[in-house]
Amino acid sequence: MSFVEIRKVETRHDLKTFIDFHYDLYEGNAYDVPTLFSDDMNTLSRDKNAAFDFCEAEYYLAYKKGKLVGRVAAIINHKANKRWGRKSVRFGWIDFVDDRKVSAALLKAVEDFGRKRGMTEVVGPLGFTDMDPEGMLTWGFDQLGTMPTLYNYPYYPEHIEAMEGYDVDNRYVEFKVMVPEALPARYEKLADMIQKRYNLRVKKLTKRDIFERGYGKRIFQLINDTYKDLYGYSELTDRQVEQYIDMYFKLLDLDLITVIEDAGADNRLAGIGITMPSLSLALQKCRRGRLLPFGWWHVIRALKCRKTEGVDLLLVGFLPEYRAKGANVLLFYDLIPRYNAHGIKWGETQVEMESNANVQSQWEAFDTHLHKRRKCYKKFI
Image (cartoon, rainbow, N blue to C red):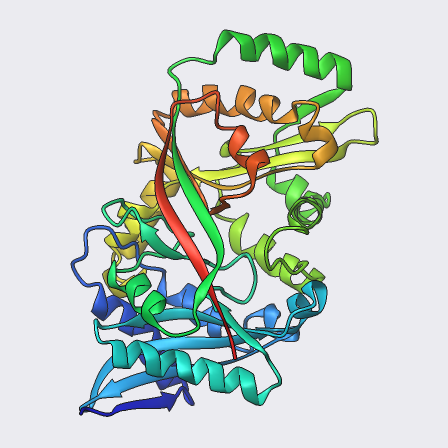
């Protein structure tokens, strides 16, 4: 019987090996969208990721007969555990060859890490926070992945579900939403009525709004308020917010971001839609997740020249009291004509909890296709 050796990541070279394993395992795969190497390095480095202010983590590599065959991250988000009253260790960044001894050894390493620190359950795949990819793909393996989500081979969930003690902890769905060729007539009437009756308005942002006038921080406060009751969420800290503002808003096309304000309540933010041109095909052209020598060109071309027919609906959220007033209608009222002008044909939602009827109901007015499903798993330890 071949022995699976688990080695803890100790050095920067080890961490590079950890990140590179995914590129090796999925080389040539038509559906996997690799993350940028630099993004993973920043997320997994204690001196770069502000989530380490309240998280601890270790990373493990699996070897068999001297060959690298798997990887996994063990993460404890102490802030989320306190918020939800759980003692969870998370597993994330999990990849492995089709060998059940390997997947079992990787998860045992996570279980042991958590057990030694007083944890009573292991859950995943999850990242440090909700801003990281989560959920294991269980259906839709023939669909192209997206930058913010995970792709995995079909045997992954088969391995997890065959292990003793692992049950489903949460289910997710993802939709492909077709962009209508013109704004539905009823949307114009509804948008006019909502703006007049509730004093809501569309706000388009400038770089100055975000970086000098405080809109960047206000947006992430809205995200905290909107997502606070969702599965496993931990409120973003000021330091995390600063990191995400710097990381995302310098690159995003502000024409594809829409804020809804309540003009009758000191311009309180009622909701937001953050969307961006799909980077899936561009990232597949970045060799091993590197921007150099030519990867940067494909990414910039997709972002700035909009050489894509799809957008990723990164964050769409409304405060409950404004969702009830139909504020999301104003979002689509603004964005659909912009999508049409840019030749955008569809949008891809990100992971949505299967039980979140409020979010899914906003797609009902469109030609929408459920095309991916995911699960998070849990085991008591």
